[in-house]
Image 1: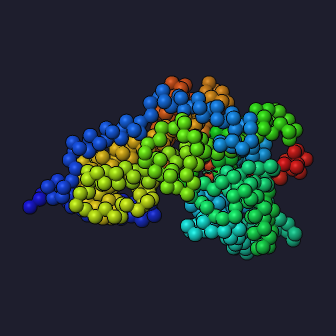
Image 2 (image 1 turned 120 degrees about the vertical axis):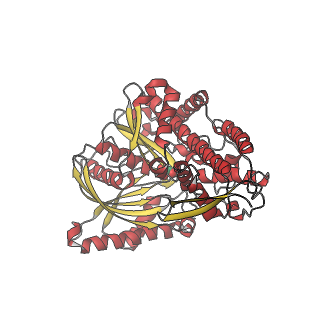
Image 3 (image 1 turned 90 degrees about the horizontal axis):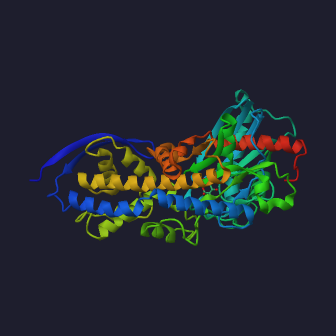
Length: 500
Ligand code: GLC
């Protein structure tokens, strides 16, 4: 009889539910499992594939910086460096009730934000989960759904005396629309969708003005709102983080997608010279850096697993940087490595592995859980593999999975550091230092992610890299959107660049 041990514990699943596990872990003779030695040999191979040396990182930073400059110089570049028409920083005195609709990668959120000035605010919000169909169906239908949710939200709050939301007859509430996809903007309340990212594919939307499409939906539902600003989540995060901490100069989202925004001098954006905006003015730039190295694949170290993720995605060739970093893809990269070892007969011989063979079943949240498993037996990892994929694992295999998750998560953080370093070096922020407002599930939930970004910055810049510090950002897509709507109202009322 094989010897067996019992393990027990509990894990919190990505859905938030706590699952108790009582598991027997078998010794190797029970099933033909891989041995500790073979797993260590395999791990060495993956270490060399997924590890980024400081020298390689510096090369990436140089290429990245050139790409950022090219995007500012000429329109329609791969990394589009989108002028957002958000002029300068908030002064902290922005006040009032504003609405924000946030169409992100996973959820739709509707928020009522009360800005109280001096960096203070209150927020009430409702979240709706988007279905896969909604992401792929007709775009106008998607915006209709957003308007319908906003209508329910506004009516509920207007009916509730305590909510503080009141409207004079004929009054319209300013609305910030956070639409976190690359949109090229001619004015702040306009945005032509360049391409869907993050797995969205709704028809009849690419190439269209999404602000206009949403306005149509708002009119259909007869909403007392005025779409004042179309905002990217990174721009919102930049402004909201600066509102509460003025040392913030850059914002990065590490979520389903990955992208950054920062404040640029208008004089350094040659492609908008024709607009006659003062060279000394400042404007936030939505980099859309997820597109770095798309199509050409010249600079980033892609493994064959990354190539498979790319080629089997709905947008092959696109978002090359994002596909190595963001939460949408990390779990899939790990799954592809595991599947390769199953095919080679190294893992799970004699077990039915069909559940692991489905693309995207291995959520990035599992990587977070694997890396944070505090038990010697790695009970959390036992739980994941038995409960979700119906396979048994040995301790050697579990240690291997955890080490692989670490390699993939660490590479993502170090590549992100390269992007941040490119902006820092372009803007010359290294000596004086700056804060980077960061948000998104990877940043907030992946253990050690921020530390690894910081470690990467030191590898790139040496000790001075410590001057660049990331911190958890304020809710950019809600609060940031509202602040930008308020800033825009004030700017236009003052007649400053009122046509954009
Ligand atoms: C994707 C989108 C970008 C967004 C990012 C984070 O990269 O293209 O607009 O900011 O995801 O949500």
